[in-house]
Image (tube, rainbow over all chains, first blue to last red; front, side, top):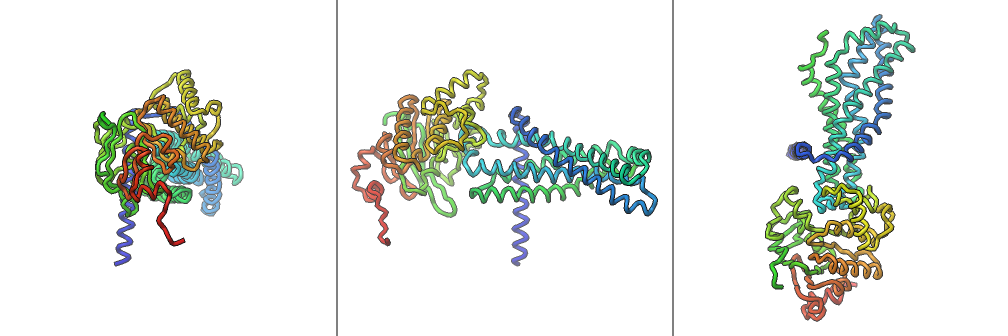
Amino acid sequence: MKILSIVRGLFMSALLSLGELAMLAGETFSSIGRGRIRIGITLRQIAEIGFGSQLVVVVTGAFTGAVFTAQAYFQFSSLNMETAVGPVVALSMFRELGPVLTGLMVAGRVGAAMSAEIGTMKVTQQIDALRALAVNPVDYLVVPRTLAMLVSMPILVVECVGLGVLASCYVGVEVLNIKGVYFLANIQKFAEGSDIMMSLIKGFVFGGLIVFISCREGLRAKDGAVGVGRATTATVVTCSLAILITNFFLTMALNIIFPAGQW
Amino acid sequence: MVSDPLIQVRDLCQHLGGQAILRGLNLDLFPGETLVLLGKSGGGKSVFLRHLIGLMRPISGSIIFEGQEITHMNERELEPVRRKIGMLFQDGALFDSMNVFDNVAFPLRERGERNPEAIIDKVARSLAMVSMTGHETKMPVNLSGGMRKRVALARAIISPPDVLLYDEPTAGLDPIVSDSINRLIRHLQSQLHATSLVVTHDLVSCNHIADRVALLHEGQIHFLGSAKELRESRDQIVRDFVDGRSGETVY
């Protein structure tokens, strides 16, 4: 009975969190629809989220592409299938690794900072001050971050995937001596526009997840510095799990629209 | 008082953490007056103040501002009400990512003022009113407690409000800085003619600025009168507060 009540408690709490996220997202898009957009703050956030995350995303993409190429080569070379390494790495980067790794890195770098910043504003009454000055915190804090994230994430995913594929080419052709012509021709043959679309859609969805989870955790922070720390940890954990779980369902759904293996 | 109340509070109740904080509080605030709300620390004074600007919703009761019931309003509906009310938070609640100038200019910019010269002029006037001229480029972290409160006050009055709410304006300040804040409140009353509600437990401050005094005790208004009537009251609870007697005999 006790286990049952714990499970029920967890389920109710997850349901409540989902409801709160949906309400925050609804309020945010309603604000955007009403044109309550602060261009200056949005541009600053694009610089912070997009420009500031480039290095970490590019390095992650490049080394993932490189190491994946090496591992694929070690396995495929025994079957004389070295030239298949290129498309395997490219498709994996486009469809899965690029968006997921970018999401995880951005959640760690930007999501944590976002929730810490908003959480600190909450516990030091700065959000109450905003409300007292007749400024809606969703309009002022969440809308610019949402727009910035939705613009930045697809671009970051493209950078991550692009560098991953470039690193794969370099390692495959220059280090592992796979024939460059076949390597590139196979990538061109198997990787299609639909794979890029899938990458971009996933980046867009993960960006939305990160920004709403981070802002919600920040806005409900309480109990001073400990509460801000708790909100930051919860942001990184929740964002990471949400990205991994959503990725599975997105893959299944998007595979219906953009089926894999239809060359 | 002959005029109608600007703010009417009726039977206001609030519970926090399972404890009754406000138990059917009734209070009227009249245009142009300065009412000082006294009470013990943790007695619900700040909680009450937060209800007046819609930062908290009561469990029951009503707050009528200029004839409008505000307790059922949502955040968007409260915006026009909040534009008429300025609030000084206990620690200032300045935006720590902005310098003094941007903090004070914030309400102007948010209300659509785009002319840089008009903004500079209004900020300069507002900072001059609180004697903070010359500190425009400082960040809040580099200001003392008294200076932060002055800047927060400059931010609250830059778009002259009809009502000013002060949450413990002299808490944590030395007697000299407290006196300067009290004088500043008096000065603003004469300059802006705003209705003011000052929450404090500082009797010196109360004597200096109050037109009327209310004493909050166990979630209700226990005493309402002038500062002189408060000092001369023979009521035991009022006397204990005025004379600073805790009633404890353990130590």
